[in-house]
Image (tube, rainbow, N blue to C red):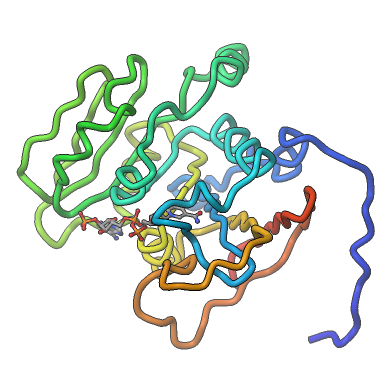
Length: 250
Ligand SMILES: NC(=O)c1ccc[n+]([C@@H]2O[C@H](COP(=O)([O-])OP(=O)(O)OC[C@H]3O[C@@H](n4cnc5c(N)ncnc54)[C@H](OP(=O)(O)O)[C@@H]3O)[C@@H](O)[C@H]2O)c1
């Protein structure tokens, strides 16, 4: 490994759409028989993934713009059930982004997918589940009922022990036409994706805050032994926020 240091000089400026265009999300991986998975997370400079139980306190307009552009560019968004509830998910996109997707021949919104062994009844109370035109796919091994008031809800039930992220991604790919998927966390879901080797791109925003306390870090769960390696591909900066694009370990 090199012991030389490259100066990361500023080379012009981009808006959020330009940044996401540099990820070339159109380049899919047909050999995988699953969507290309882009994970996007934000943490404070001391590594915490939430402030007062939510990621929102870490973000900025630039960070939120990148997230919306990512959502605008993918076929589906995968969000952990705890994140859906804690972050009070409403709409995924604003009217401008919906129009851009329609102009590009896509559905107005990406599919919202989640995976949960038990079904928390709070999910159906989310505003996301009331959005007309929003497609939601829930992967579970629970027999419990879950209803959506306005969204188009599909529940995919597995036998106990057969609910895996690999099966979930294969189903999204084969039965819902999902070629690109954005995972918005949370830390438990992110660790599970990483453990199954299912992250292709990792967009990590470093927020210029020190949080301390006991909030989760980017990944929650048992340690990886040995730790998983990443390759740094691209970096961007907006004010004091740093945006890092990693690809998966080899
Ligand atoms: N900083 C950021 O970018 C960011 C992003 C997202 C969230 N957050 C924060 O993170 C916190 C929530 O994260 P979290 O880690 O507690 O929850 P989470 O990852 O959103 O959801 C965890 C749940 O996902 C389900 N799950 C995960 N992997 C699974 C698998 N392989 N098979 C089946 N089900 C699976 C399980 O549900 P069941 O228990 O029902 O099986 C698990 O309890 C909130 O504070 C939120 O604000 C931060």
